[in-house]
Image (tube, rainbow, N blue to C red; front, side):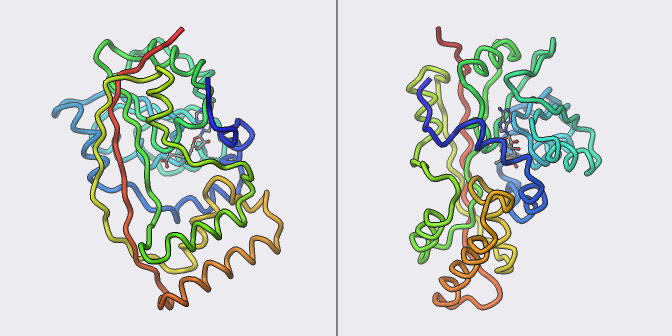
Length: 259
Ligand SMILES: C[S@@+](CC[C@H](N)C(=O)[O-])C[C@H]1O[C@@H](n2cnc3c(N)ncnc32)[C@H](O)[C@@H]1O
């Protein structure tokens, strides 16, 4: 298995940090289009869905609301607690996907911004066993609020302050495909949807992301990060609110279990 170094278990475990869970609601919500594309896999019937790395239930709950029978699996006890507190018919299991066991076979497997974390050599044979013959894996990516004119400045600030020092850009779909974990890939790239956020919420949303857990950042560094982001926004003409676009991709693939 050839995975970028920064996608380690230790880094993935930061989703158990209190600040990450508390700030999670400031990340943009999945658009209705994403939920509809996933739900439409059932062609009008109720599906059994396994949501891998379900977090606070951002995908599990809207799918359950559409009448699907959803099990979300996540190793972060705090994420699972927050998901359960929302009250939904979706069931949440506190476990690494690698350690999840069930006799059930699912109609759809979903991994929304999460399949980069587990150990693929353990996970994909397991997913294959949990899938029915025609079950697809849906990989959802995206969800950043992108402001076109300043995205490079924001990226520079992210790189300056992120506690994930060895970050290397990667395409999750490409990596999984190259290593034989998925095949027959169909990607749907959705058009950007406009979103306006208060600047404080925009800054807070970063603290729900990999590399910006407040428990793992020096207090002065966290403050300086917020100041730098605010400065770029002010220089660009935003005062209290920031407006940009949020992009998502949904990729359907067959699950493979290479030797
Ligand atoms: C960026 S969050 C995505 C949460 C949710 N799917 C969403 O889109 O809002 C990544 C999630 O993957 C979970 N995760 C990390 N390692 C995992 C593993 N080995 N198995 C399953 N989930 C894992 C984290 O706890 C975290 O909740």
